[in-house]
Length: 239
Ligand SMILES: *Cc1c(COP(=O)(O)O)cnc(C)c1O
Image (tube, rainbow, N blue to C red; front, side, top):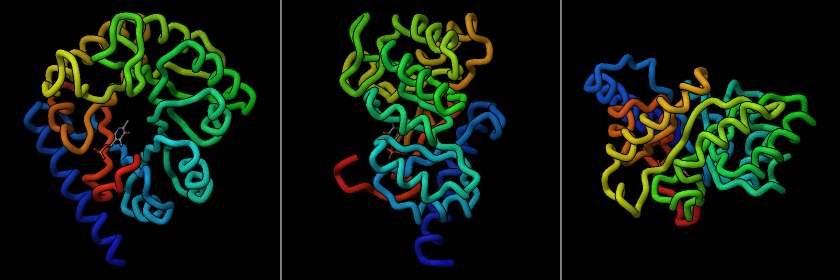
């Protein structure tokens, strides 16, 4: 094993142990939580090592970096998740490699994703990104729609050709009433998820929790955690 592969294996084992412990503490089966490794800023060679080590879900937040990486790794059995703020002019590219777009936060993006998915004959899974610190009817500074926009966006996705509504995504807010209260934030997400599932029973994904707060997300009921630094190491400032 190369040094890098051994390092990634060790980090993955540690993250796996954290997820397993949190599942045990929550009385949940380990299989209820899927690990998505956020590979942003790291090279395709790392993605390849991760796939070798059994990782099946990776996430990226910038199309400029993700598109060539996904192309270089197209032989690997990976699902690609897009988790960054998405401009409509990047949608066609993202629809070419992503299985799931986790950052759907405005009607215009739904229209663009639908057109791109249709044109490429693909079905794209979509998560509505929720900004728990956004004002009513607005979007958050780091993307995401205010909770009161969730139902409308989910209905739009569900009605859009080429798109599938899979659930919700959030990043624990740094500001507002949930700042520093990750578990409460994720519990609020689970309430929103229940309400979403009344209209869209198959939209069961709740993507929440990162390196610093994955335990709180698993305890609250998240189905997917997105872990970057705890697996790959600290990133250079950008990203
Ligand atoms: C970078 C990123 C992550 C991973 O964050 P870490 O703290 O490195 O685990 C998760 N979700 C999103 C949306 C990200 O941009």
